[in-house]
Length: 97
Image: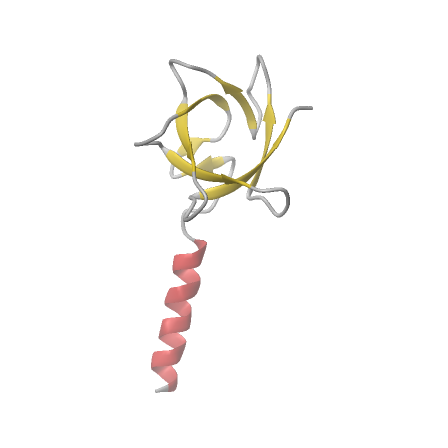
């Protein structure tokens, strides 16, 4: 019974650490550049929060070439996002420094 508990705990740990933001990528896509907001079929579902965000997003108008720098566009995005309230892929905090 103890072994089963340890195995379940290990599986829970592994599942909770997969698909996290690492090296400014998520699921193999870079998290900077040109971003388009869509209502469905987005690359990522994100939730905007005020604190403890997975990624701090700096909204820019040009040269978004560092981690978390996003330019919102209407066409030709590097990736798409959909704003959600539940079950996001990751959370973001928006700023415009």
